[in-house]
Amino acid sequence: MSEKAPAAKPMEGGMDTDALMKELGQGGRFHIINYILVSLAMFSLAQYQTQYVFLAADVPYRCIVPECEAGNTTEYSPSWLEGAPGEHERCRRPVPLDPQLPCASDAFSDALQPCDQWIYASHDTIVAEFNLACQDWKRTLVGTVHNFGMLVSLPILGYVSDRWGRKSALVISCTLVGAIGTLKAFSVSYEMYIIIEFLETLAGASAFPAAYIITVELLGQDKRVLTTAFLGIVLVMGGICFALLARTFHYWRTFILVVYPPSILFITYIYLLPESIRWLLSKGRREEALEIVTRAAKMNKVTLSEQTLKKLSVADVVVTKEERDEEEGLWTQVFRSPIILKRLAICSWWWITCTFVFYGLAINSVSLAGNKYTNYILVVSVEIIAVVNNAIVLDRIGRKRTLLIAFIVCGLSCITIAFVPERMWWLATMLYLLGKIAITQAFSGIYMYTAELFPTRARHSLLACCSMLGRVGSIIAPQMPLLAMYVEWLPSVLFGCTALVAGALMTTTPETLNARLPDTIADAERLASSPTDKEQATSRL
Image (cartoon, rainbow, N blue to C red; front, side, top):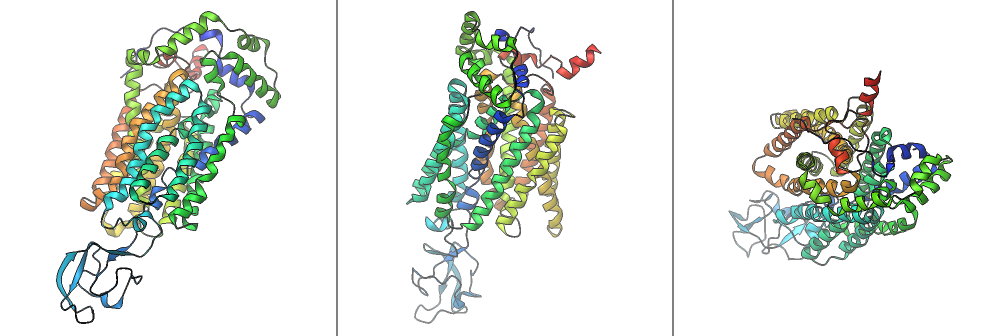
């Protein structure tokens, strides 16, 4: 399938933003400071994205037998229970043959009856705290509500980002997630915990795309892959730190009070982090852009050309009016463009696949044999392989081919797991990790590829729309362990099939390797037929 694009038109206002970014340099002091600021936000937020894996984790529990022990007993494994009928049952208990006789393993009838009191081996998670025994759906609902909050949040803060700035969206998200998330530590009921979980993600879900877009828009086209890899490694480091903190601070309230409050300090980014230059120029706010560009040039010790300064200093009233008119009819233009609409639908499926498989595999990692914290660290650590691999191949073989291979490898690995015999657990584990590496590579690449397919004026809104629809996948993912209780092989087959469909759809969109980052709807449409810079250079030889 091919996309037919309209004829090209000059860049608005004559300002080539990619040329401006290159003129500023991309490794100077201004850029490094901004990379560090954004990285701190990414590192911190990486500790919240799957916190429910540990905070709402299952713990061992059993029924209290009221004929044999008090309701407030603390003895989890009494001797009289060993060998008794239903010893390993969690929701039914044995019944003594004669309540007057002392309890013993041979003093129970074979009949079991439902119980209404439980004793927990650990009180580290909300399962024991809110007495969620035999209600697995309430435990997994926490992850679903977490991701539903993201679904609601992304279009709201995506609009905030495109209307009032990338920095505004990032500061609001990072600060509120710290403030609201801290309140979870003071929850007095399951219902209160669930409501705060939803509000936390409602406020903070857009921090990731906002931070990513700020970084991408700060760069020229030749540095996007390296920066994406860098941010991916930061996320991995944040995930490892999250598991180490969870292992150190087992009790869920303590963990929350250690991890969440520091994010409130991101409110200082109002003064520390500059707004996206690309966004300011796309809104016609050239005076503010000039101020930031001048400061950046001074910090990077570069001298801007007179032509660049003139373009930034002179505001063309006619062009500014056109830009304002285009902004007001932005979504009308999106819906009138078959190219952008088709691209939006395809990107949304990619996001559904990535969130479904990525979070599904991460959640299931704590169910693998061995220590759950070590398993989580292992599964997160292998993501570095995917990130480094992306840094090597995305600029060499292109975005489409890289992501196509990643989706296919992930799909085949996950489907194959369903046919591996139990005695070959090591092979299943290797396929599991291979699938995790592949979907991480796809997820990391999709962030950049999606951002490159959409224009600056609607980039965050359209990226947020894809991410919002993608949350359908992460909403379903926490329910996969429940599905596995009924059909053990089905979750891995579902993971694999969705990845293969995503790979097939990858053949229908344009390559963005060496292409300019589009600023308008028309620019984005021209990606469908315009050759990349590299191809143009080749054709001139």
